Image (cartoon, rainbow, N blue to C red):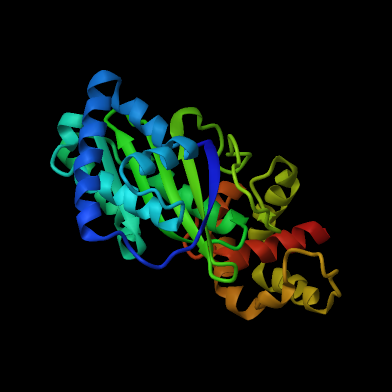
Length: 292
């Protein structure tokens, strides 16, 4: 973090042919190892965090379709290309698509054990970047791909992608850890896309009061808070309102609110990072916060 940009791409369901992917792996290995020798592993991480450089890199590798597949294929080729060379290159790549993305913390920890790298801070950065883009920022794109790149010095970047099945588009999110200040306050450096969405953005600077109130509400007695949430069901919201109260089921989030009450999260970042706190819980708290 902060995020360096967002790329919006058409969603494709096919995959790169094996003959092309095998060549992409070889070429990405040569480019990355040469880049590390000429500059540094940290400079590689910085480039991957740039959405424009990343898109051009995909074209150089031969994947010149500007679709969702570029993200998964390029990162897969880079990860496989340097497999076994991570120590020499000084670059480590964890995660991937679907079920592989959920193994990211284990892969980070494994690299840490083998090469004496402290993994906890990196695992936290990986988890929080996904939480922010999937829960704190609700723009209609469900994350399905998450890759975490880092060096021995702890310099890191995230490239992750979400999909929107309604408009058949994918959105790629780039993070860079060089200037981390706050995970939940204006983490963007730039947003580069050709499609705007109605979004709930709890990491905007203007959402400071909502963040503070959401954390405060999460510390309240669940029964009292649930009564407030249930009262929202009868509100007649304008059609332009981006958040659908019909999507909120107080009974389903009761268990989560009990956990937040017991944990007493001191701030929004702690609340967001809690296991079980997902998009619907954050929407409910943000609505009550706005009402208050």
